[in-house]
Length: 321
Ligand SMILES: Cc1cc2nc3c(=O)[nH]c(=O)nc-3n(C[C@H](O)[C@H](O)[C@H](O)COP(=O)(O)O)c2cc1C
Image 1: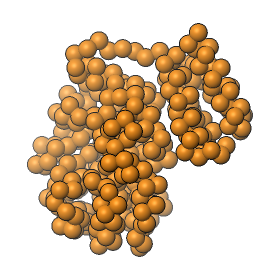
Image 2: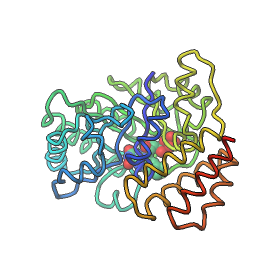
Image 3: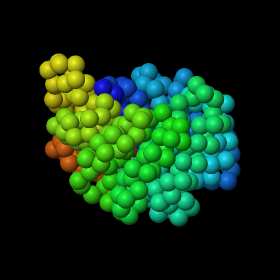
């Protein structure tokens, strides 16, 4: 079984990838999407989105990290992908699922699901230009407005030369509304000759067992659930290994929160980035953990990073007393 940490722009940046892969359970992760328009990105841009490139394409915990590209200009995407490879990237993923209006307006992400021929052209162009040893993968939703082209789009990605495909089981217009249509992942898996990773609405071990059963996939990608429950992948791996599944208590989570904040501070020692990232994470975790709500309330109005660090340290001490 493969467990993959989902790319999530603005949420799972290199710091979150670092933390979550340290906690464990992941076999792979993917960078936030790097948007390709008319320019060719510099080394610093690639390293900004995927600092793992400079670490042998691994997070500090040693989990492999692919670089995700988003765009529709096949030639320029190929030029950029080759640049990323020149700077050290060793796996490229293509985004055919982003629902953001600005991205879709410029013909990127989910809007391409209306044009399977263009998807095929993009994948084929990149496959032909990239060195053979660089794996190329794709990630798609089920469609834009409806699912009528889902199988065609999946086939376009597979026949274009991708070696694996991740399916987020919703259309663009379905946004993030539950339910995710896992039965469509099975249809796609049965339709294409490449391995399919199942994705959408896995928030618990029970969901994981459900998606695996419904789709028959040997690979599952965790998105929001990975952030809300930072030990979700670890629990799943414990289950898969036949070990006792340990429900993490918040004392351990409070250590991770503190660690995350200090990793954010080490990346950008201003007040804004670490404080905003912490509040974003607590805002998501408070749905799952009452203690996260308490901590969220304690830092909600605080803007100064040093003050936040003091609150976090005191909270961790209290939880672990
Ligand atoms: C905040 C946010 C940012 C996302 N950014 C990306 C992205 O950069 N690339 C991508 O392929 N998918 C992106 N996604 C989609 C996720 O990778 C995933 O497919 C989706 O959240 C469904 O999985 P989940 O139900 O486990 O969250 C994003 C999702 C969220 C919520």
